Length: 175
Image (cartoon, rainbow, N blue to C red; front, side, top):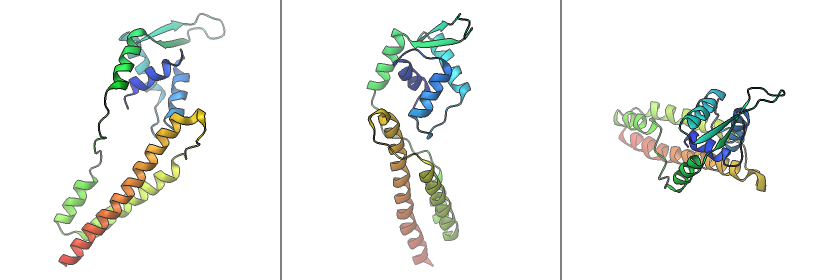
């Protein structure tokens, strides 16, 4: 997900300062994707520079110099175009399949088993850390993100089991 559009989406709900934007992002992304404060402020500055957001400087004694950002009309149009664009399939982001294939090509069953075990342990650890969907109306966006991550982990675990059955069995037959 492009951070720029996530922030525009949050600002579409009303003007906010940088720390409120970061807090909402972290709630929405359910701890799956952590955004640091520097990324948020740099993105807000770019949005303002590109006129996709407006900036209001507070002059009140309670919070002098505190800036509030709001989505501009151009920002709403850009967000709308991005939301309407088809997403397509998520690109593969792991080198694990190539590493496994090379080990299979080299008939290195021990390395295949080791890599599969390491990846399974990572998936299990991630699954334990992911928040479980709450199912209440106020957490719908957060639940969608958490459910997506949980399903990706489950799919990867299924794929690892398939690879283990296929590659380990195949290399065992060759021995």
